Length: 118
Length: 105
Image 1 (cartoon, rainbow over the protein chains, first blue to last red):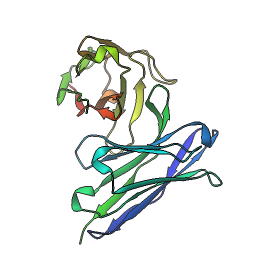
Image 2: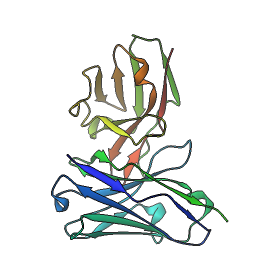
Image 3: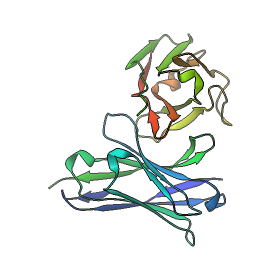
C-alpha cells in the first residue's frame, strides 16, 4: 500500500533552517509529484510547492519563494523540504502529499511539527 | 491567486444532511476536491473531481460543482463525520478553502 512516512518533530531558533523528509513506498516513486502543505495550529491548509521526483523540477508558491528548497533522492525514494530564515510564524505541522491528476492529494504523510522558538 | 471561500462552521443534527459550500470565481469550470480532517490527523481525500469518491469513502459523501459554488453533501450524518472540511483546486498555484468545521448536534 502507498505510504508516506515523514521525519520527526523539530525545534529551531528564529533565523535557522529546518529540513523535513518524506519517504515514499508502495508505488513507483518517480511516477507522482509530491507537494508540501503546512498548517499552523488552529488554521487552514497552505500549499507550499511541489517536486517532481523524476526530473527534480519544482514549483514553489510565491509566498515561499526564496526560502524553500524541495529536493528528491531517487535511490532512497525520499523527498525533502528545507525552509530557511525561520520565523515564529513558521511554527506549523508540515505535510507531504502525493499528487494525482488532475491536481489532488490522495495520500498524505503523518505530518511533522516544526516549532520555531528562541 | 485564486480564492476559495467556505463558511467557518456548519451544524447539523445527527442523521440529517450537511451541505458545505465552497465559493470561487467560475469554480464550475475547475476540478474541485474535498478533504476531511479530524483533530490531530492528516487530511483525508473524500471527493475528487467534483463527485468521485476514493475507495473506502462512504456513498453518503457526494459533491456538485456549478457556477460559482461547489458543494460537499454528507447524507445521514454520523458522529464520526464531525471534522474540518477543506475544498481545493489546482489553479497554479494550488488553492485551499479556509475550511469548515462540521458540528453534529
